[in-house]
Structure formats: structure tokens, C-alpha cells
Length: 316
Image 1: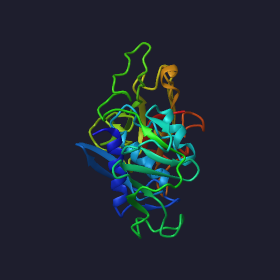
Image 2: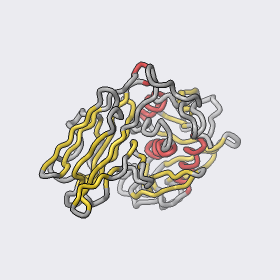
Image 3: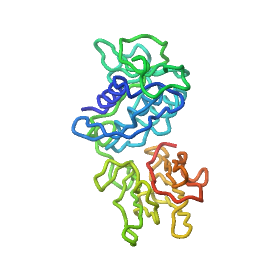
């Protein structure tokens, strides 16, 4: 399957599954689940979304297992979707007379977005309105129309974001392999691992390459839920030529982490940054917000021990 077909399949499943509803409060789901599509496993959160977060999520999930994993993470609402999606090199902004393909996005820059499911007939999938408006909703689709698949209509749309990439197995949007090192446009993905105490000994867990566990699990994070991290390390060079990381340790416990990604060849790829967050063992345990390089002093509350680290790269 092509990446656009996988994205369309994911969004269609979201819209047809009553566990998904509309909300401006939850926006990115709640509970992780693994879906099998075309022989591959994809991680997605079940719960409530809105129009933009649902389409961003469908495409972000579709990009798992590819060199562009995390490339759309900077997209947040309809206001910046065009900039981020087109800036990734995977999409082009087309006029509304363009014949959309599955996975393409019908975008109103100010207010709404829906996904094309098919050309003939032209069918859309969208998250549109909650059981109690946009706030205070019960999780899931209470009416059958919070998320739905139906015929085309004109919102009106500002443009169509058209996918110009290749197959799911491709290594670049055109389907060609990236240039070799030395003037390369290939981006290294951060490769890192965390250590925990097991049986009274410091034990290193399998490496993560971005949000992919090289140990074979479907986890998108390094660490074991509920088990504090006592060390973390990055493979040399995987943060780029001048990339670095800094640990904040207290009493043998990791309580803070700062990561800086240095893009090897920004002239060819544009600039990228580390996008990451951590989960700490407070009462109750909690995820911190997403951090961008060292812009806000790193991740962690510098008090409670961290047990999970989730990290990838995204366009600046």
C-alpha cells in the first residue's frame, strides 16, 4: 500500500469506530492500541480528537516505519497544517479544482479539514462536532456523526493538500534512495537507550531509534512504566554532527533531560530539531509537555524520577 492509502485507511477506521469521538479537550486520544495494516503494526491512541488532530494523527501514524516518522509533529491546527505538511516535502498545496486522491486533505486554513477517501465517488472522512459541542463531551461517538464517512461537500475549502510521496517501502518522497553520506540529504534518527535497576543491578534496555523499539516491542518510548530510569545514553552521531544531550541526575535518579539535534545538511533537508517529552513518577504520574531542542531548558520537572522518554525529530 502507498502511504496515502494507509493514512486514508487509518482515518476511515477512526471515523467508523465509535470509541473515537470529537473534543477540543482530549484532542489526541487516550489509550494506546496497535492496529495491523498491510502486514505492519501501527500504534495509535483510542479516544477523542478534533478535525485537525485526527488527520494529523492519521498521517503521523502512517509515517511510522518510514524515514519521515515525526516529520509532521509540528502541525497543531488547521492554521499551520499547510506550512508543516508542505514543508515536509511530502505534500503540495493544490487548488480546489484538483482531483483529490485517498489521503489528500481538504483544508480550510481557518476552521476545518477533512480527508479524501476515494475519487469516484468523492467520499470524505471527518471529525466534526461533539455530543456537547466542543467541550465537556463523553469520550467516544455518541451520535454516529462526531466522526463519520460520507459524500463530498464544499465547506468551503481553501485548498487540497496533495500527497506527492511514494510507496510505504520507499526511502524518499520520489521513491529514490537518499544520497550517500558526504553531501547527504539523509537525516540520522536519534538512537538512544535507558537503564533501570533490575535485580539490584543497572540494566540497559534495548535501543530506541526515534519512536521505534529495536527490541521488538510496539512501545514508542524508552523505559518501563513505573520503573525509574537511572541512566540514558545516545549513540554517537545519531543527534547529528554537533548534537548533544545533558542528563540531570539526583541520587542516582534521572530527573531531567535536555536533547539538541544538529541537522547534518540543512541546505538539502531544511532544519530539524529534537521533539521529545518525558513521563515522571509523581503522585499521580504524569507526562510533561513536548520540548523542542533546548528551547525551554529540557524535559522533566527536575524533582521527580523519570520512567519514560519519548523522542523523535521534526522540522523546525
